[in-house]
Image 1 (cartoon, rainbow, N blue to C red):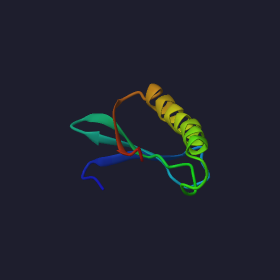
Image 2 (cartoon, rainbow, N blue to C red; image 1 turned 135 degrees about the horizontal axis):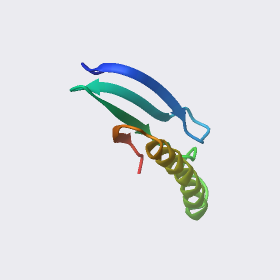
Image 3 (cartoon, rainbow, N blue to C red; image 1 turned 90 degrees about the vertical axis):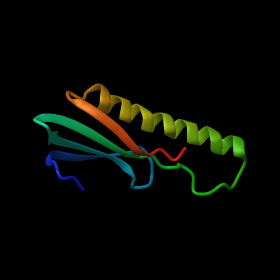
Image 4 (cartoon, rainbow, N blue to C red; image 1 turned 30 degrees about the horizontal axis):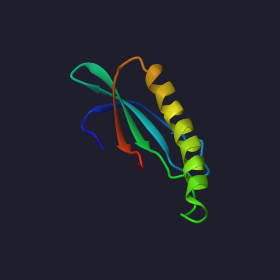
Length: 89
C-alpha cells in the first residue's frame, strides 16, 4: 500500500522450494523514482530435525543464493532504492 504512484512491480522468486520472494516496486515520489525491494528470505529447511551442522550448511548455501539474487537486483537498479523486509535471520 502506498499513496505514491506505482510505476512497476515485479516478483523475483527465490531459489528455494517455498514461495517467498523479493517484491520490487518502483514508485514516483516528489518527482523522482524510488525502487523498494521488499524481501522475505525463507528458512530452507522443513524443520529442525537432523544434525544441526547439516542444517546450518544447507541454510548457508540457500542464504548465499538469496543474497546473491538481492545483490544482483540492487547492482542493476538505476534509481535510489530501499531494501526492507523479513530476512529470517
